[in-house]
Image (cartoon, rainbow, N blue to C red; front, side, top):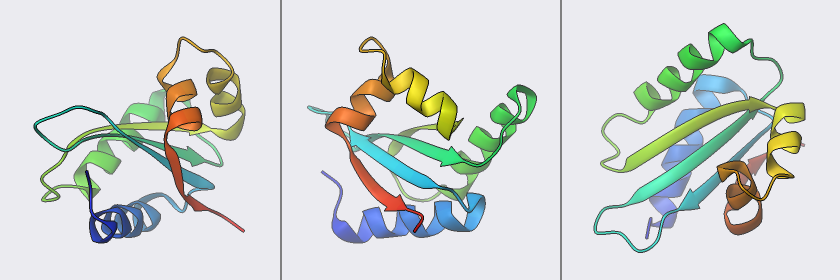
Length: 103
């Protein structure tokens, strides 16, 4: 399980990288490593730019020593995917935690 300091560091790095609407995190259990799925909700993202945005998130978290998956969606995409019980977005929204939400 990640410490609060690690969660704050993840949040700080991703805020600097994306200026997101919100950031969700789901720790995968059980695991020998610290596996975490991170979903970042941004204002805009084209399909072509999405892969670049996800790569930027991975780069921002270099050195954190966690196994991670970084997803980047717009609010509309996240709402659509999170409504489907078969998606990781659903699991992140319903079983993870929101570590940041823009006021």
